[in-house]
Structure formats: C-alpha cells, structure tokens
Image (cartoon, rainbow, N blue to C red; front, side):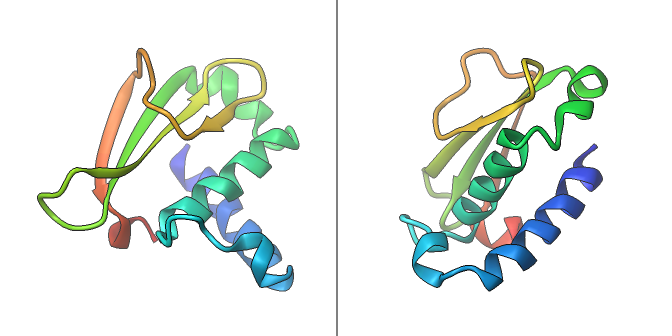
Length: 106
C-alpha cells in the first residue's frame, strides 16, 4: 500500500517541480510537509479511492526535525473513510502511528 502511495507521490513531486516554487514551498521548511501536501492533493482528486477498501486504516505520522526531539509536525492520513484525506493534526484513534525524522521521510 505504501509503495503505491509513494509511487504516486513521486509522480506528484515531478508535477510539482514544474509548478511555480512559491506554491509548493513548505511553511515549516520540512521536506515531509511538502510530501503530505502532495498526498492530500492526490487523495482529494479521488486517485486513491481504490485504496480505501483495501487499507481500511487511519495512520498517524509524527515528524521530528532531529533525533530525540519532540514532533514538529503531526499528520493524520485517513485511508478508512470516503476517498481518503490528509490532515495536519493528531489522529484521535489511529490504527498505527509512525514517528520519524524529517530527513528519513524524503
């Protein structure tokens, strides 16, 4: 499942590279923020709709700037409801939560 998402994220990255830089610049300066924005766009267009009945899960991501630090960004990826969605918030009842360094997310 993550392989499919990441393949599509790579396609989105290529498309975003052709877009004006100002519209794709992350607010936090972290690489992961841009990737989550790309995933949100992908799901909003309904391109991940086929994943919902297969995955049926909500994932939390806690992104750290440095090892041992506190999360700088927290995201929820909902692949359980509707056509899926990405929100910058702490998930209420995630099926799994991943904590990782921003540099490892790229």
